[in-house]
Length: 397
Image (cartoon, rainbow, N blue to C red; front, side, top):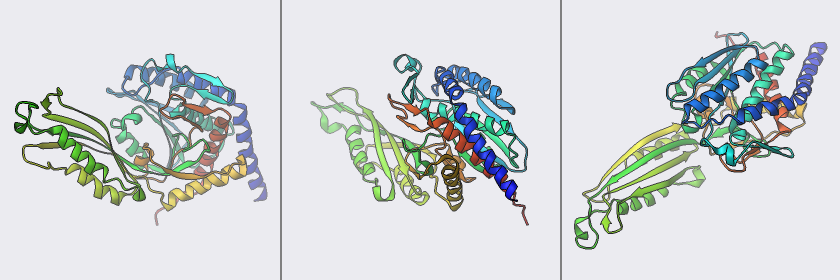
C-alpha cells in the first residue's frame, strides 16, 4: 500500500516537472493559435484557426477527433480519449470577441513573463494548457477509469446558441466538468459560482408629431424609454447580487420631431435562481405608462446561475489540495459576474470553472497571460483529471 502511494506521488511530481519543461512548446502553440484570428461571427476565420487547433491536438494527443460541422458559426471540435462508463468533460471555446484585423493593432508579443494578443487570455492559452495536460497524462500512461472528452466550441462569446445542445448533451453524460475559462483574477482563483446572464431588447412605439407646431399630438417613445430605464435600473439589488443595466439606446429621427420609436439593449446579471424567477417576469412584462404607446420586449436568459453546490465545493477542495501538495499554491475560489458555458453544464453535472490561463485584460486592449503560469495551470488540470478519473464508479443499488 505504501509502495502504491509512493508511486502515485512520484507520477504526480513527474507530470509537474514534465510540463515545466514543455513551457516553450506551449508558448509556441499559443503563438500559432493567436495569430489565427477567430472572431465569433467570421466562420471562415474561426475554421482556419480550428484547423490549426486540430493540428496541435493531433501532434500531442492520441485520441478520437471529431469535427462537428456548423453552418452558421465555426466548426466545433470533440476529442475523446480513454475508456469508461463515465466521462469527464473538459470544455473550452475557440472564438474571441476581437474583430478581424485586431492583430494589426494588438500583435502577439512577449514582454518579460507576459504574452499579449487578442484572445490569449480568453481563452486560447486555456486550450493550449488543456491539450498539454492530456499530453502529459498520456506520456506517463496514467490509468484513468473514466473517458475524457475535450469539447471546443466556437460561439461562446455570443451566447452559445448553436453549441448549447452539444454542451448540454455532453454535460448530461459527464460525472465532472472542467472549464478552461481564465482564472478569476491575476491571483489565479477558480470560479465555483457564476451569475446568470440575460440579454433583452426593448422596442417602444409612440406617435410622431412636429415638436414645435403640434407637440400635443405626439407621444414620445424616447420619454417613455427614459421612464422605463429608471424603473429597470431600480431593479438592481447589489445585496442580492442582481444588476440590471441598459447599455445601449437609440431612437428618434430629428430634434424637431416627437420620437415615434426608441430602442434599448438590456443586460441582467442575477446570482440566485429564485431571484431570476422574480426579476425576469418584471422585465418581460413591461407596460406603457400611458395610452398610445406600445412596448415590445424580446430576448431571454442566455445562461442560468451557476450555484456553488456541495459537489462543486468538493471538486474545488480536491483542486486546492492538489495545488498545495504538488504546486505549492494556495488556491482560492470566488463568484464571477461573467457568464460562461460552465453555467450551462452546471445544471447537469458538478462544474469547476476558471481552470484556464492566469492573466488579465479579458476583452481589453491589455489582454495578456502570465507565461510562467501556463505549465502550472496545465499541471493542475492534469492532476485533477487524474484524481477525478481514479475515483471509483458508483453503481446504482
